[in-house]
Image (cartoon, rainbow, N blue to C red; front, top):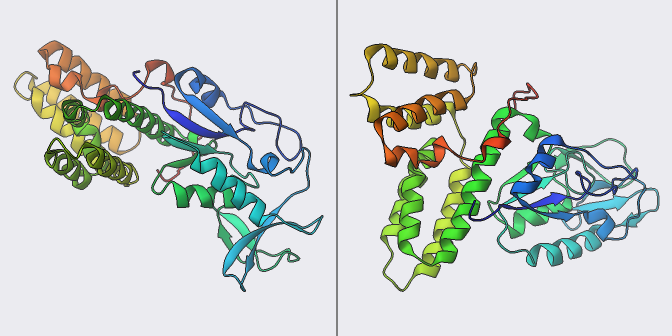
Length: 322
């Protein structure tokens, strides 16, 4: 890799014993990822002087100010301003961030489905939200990807996560080169990967590159990055992935036998039914590309999206949304 992905991660995952009970979470996948990425660790609760171990905090709705507030009921302390102040200072100092991996069910980092109470005394929740630190991430890093370590146990979500972080890291290197030719190459190499997420935004990315006039590269970088984040936030439907693989398949329509074509289409059906991983199809296309010396296809990111030692088939078997 030219650049390592830069990922902000909850410090209690593999790094520090800073959970509310003085524990930490050991995650095998994220530990394996360590040598491939730059982790920026943070524990928002410890940062605002909530010691370890500590009493729980919760969110409640303040109708007077029309906001969600953070409260430690046992000590009757409102922590909203402290958490917002820290979040803004920490997040505004960050540069070149590719992703955020937050602790599932953490009192400060849980991404969604956090219970919100009608007041700080209530024991019955009446709604759901995300925690304050995450809300500040969403405000400052609009459209940036957020994930929690529990969802990454799902094979399809983990595969998509790895594909995206290494693509975004490569894009940062392209921007640092200040060469429109490198950006054109990047776009070409990611043609089918982008097609697998959003054909609409794929076309828009080409339009942004086409607007280059030797004086507006900074503006090109801004809009291109904003658009690629929107592309990666698009729903990665199976039919889009199959469509991208089918487009690559047509490069081999003249060199493949009838039996090979039938086998490939049967394999696509198995993938559509979630009975095999995408790597099965990728291996077939890579073999054909090597055989036919299809250099353009061999350079496609979708066929080699991340380091091979990160490939693993372990799965939570949970049907989670991408």
